Amino acid sequence: MVTAWIGSISFLLVAILYVFLALGFPYGDFAMGGKYKVMPKQMRLTCIFSVFIQLIAVMFLLHVGNCDRQVE
Image 1 (cartoon, rainbow, N blue to C red):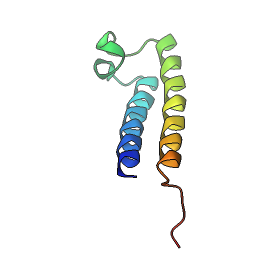
Image 2 (tube, rainbow, N blue to C red):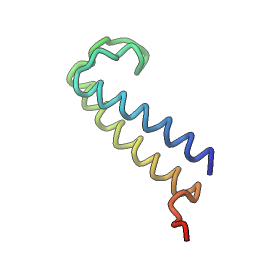
Image 3 (cartoon, one colour):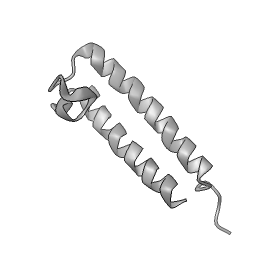
Image 4 (cartoon, rainbow, N blue to C red):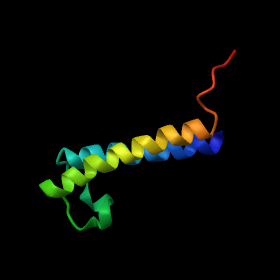
C-alpha cells in the first residue's frame, strides 16, 4: 500500500508538471529530454494526452494497492 501511494504521488507530481507545460510555462528543461524550454503547440497536445495517461496510472496504482477500500 505504501508503494502505491509513493508511485501515485510521483505520477501526480509529473502530471502537474505536464499541465504547466501544456499551459505554456517555461519548464521544458524538465520534460521530454529538455529540447524545448517552452513547448510548441503540437507538443502541448502531447502533454495534455500524457496527463490523462498519468491520471489513469494513478487510479490504477491506488486500485491495485487496495487504497480504495473503505475504513470501517
